[in-house]
Length: 318
Length: 218
Image (cartoon, rainbow over all chains, first blue to last red; front, side, top):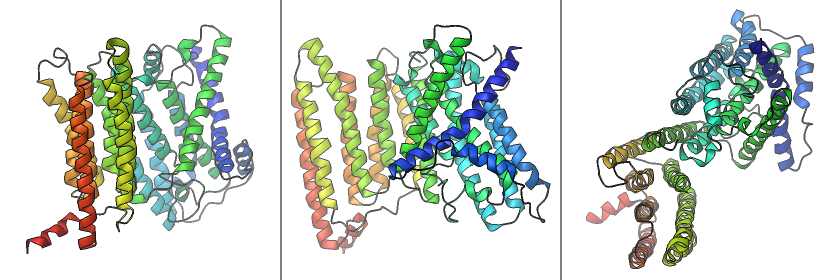
């Protein structure tokens, strides 16, 4: 019973909040350029409009092209269900762990890449080769940083990790966690195609990565792809804030009010991370494609340094 | 408080990794400035601690000297010397940047294993601050090897000096004042001489690529 309640609340929060984040980031960018910008809720309107339209599918494409939007959306939702938005609503046992989380997202990405190759347009092939490069560079970093927190909490289940981190109070004062925090922040920027790695707002063939892959989609399919990307972004941010900035230990209440309060604090944290991402996006320029390995190496080093600090400290203070 | 120093030492270590991943002359100087700021923050908090606990004011003087020399004077001097140099981006390294960064990571592991065999540092428990700060020295040395232009060598030298200083600070909680002063004057003269030499080399050869010095051998 409790697991059903968890799934309902989790799905509701994830699906409602995910498009809002893109709106907030776009609004901050617009304000920094002295523009008024689109309203915060623009992405909801866009998705609604796209869902009403029929989608155009190329004659030469195979079934992969048609099935991919559903797979991308489903994998994003499945990955989102593994990362609890609040430990208050989570059941005692949650199926799935960090390895499953990473591999589910990799499955969605794999289908996105072969669907982009399927229509045989030049942009699609270029986009998927770039995406393969970026994702293979960031995956070691995310695995090492998640394994470090997993080693500290002696479990690979995300719920168990969050429960252990709750008892630490403020983890960010500790060197291990501050390194992992910055590593995950870099990963979020790379995975959600934000500016130092990819520019989400252009359709210039030299720079686009994620946009190039979904260029052939229209209507319903495009809506599912974009919704899936937004949910993936929210899932990564949830992972960051709920592991490294835990808040549930502050709430002394029980029952429904505790859940509401916990979700409110969660929203504030997510919006805070969004503001950090927007500031990073405004204040940097897009990197050359061949400079992305340097950024990925730095992110990997951040997570490895965190890992090493854990071993050097021998788990004494951690 | 120990957590605070641990975090600072890791941040200083990471700033040297950022330095390793950079290839713009301006970002070398900027990263060095940030590293010196972190150093000043660490020494400043040690100064406050020593004033409260022992009533010593010399660490505070050292902290002020770091701010004046390493955060303000030397970066400005380097910026001025390199405003006229022709190149802005370094192009040839001995290896590519991701491999350089990974080698640096290997240096940290090496440091960790070397220090774990030494008795006497914190009764057999490895001091994370000492590991991190000795790694900064090694990374500074490796930075000097990996860069071919003179600016890289100067910055590498300064990073080594930062590393030595922070190692001494973390293992002794404040050295005798005269030793600190000696290190500072040493470094200052070295940097000034290097700056003048680089200027002269640039004038003579229209470039500060140190490989061209081989032409002098005739």
